[in-house]
Image (cartoon, rainbow, N blue to C red; front, side):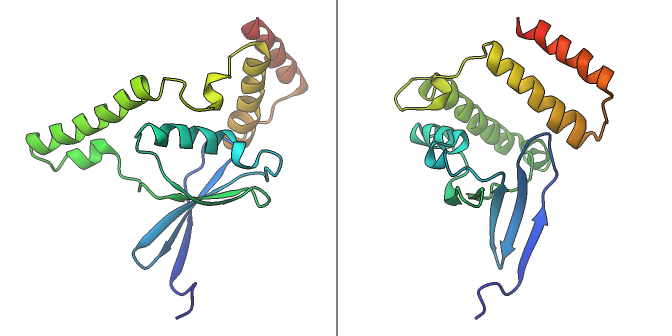
Length: 171
């Protein structure tokens, strides 16, 4: 058997980020490939990996990381599919419907209570939305949402106005 026989690769809908997601299917297996800029300096301390491991250690059901390459800038993830709970429950009995919503609530409780305790070296506990972080997030939004995703070209004047607005928000 050829390892890549009957392999399909589908680019998933984009969002306003610096990541691209691909669904890779072969036979009955499906994985997600998260592609981003290489991160050799961060390695296993990449925030995505760090937070995923923290949530998983507290029993939160998050996609498992099956492989990653900092040099290539990729992570191979478990595929949770793309069916929303709302769509899934449309064909259920009230009892089945309630079961799925209680399972979803249980995950939220795990995040809020168990995973909110600092029991690991999770980067989330050392991050703060100070002026520098907020300014960085606003610049990121401008680049990936406004310019890349929405395809809006900003004039120099628009960029200066946004920059001044970002400074006001960051204060």
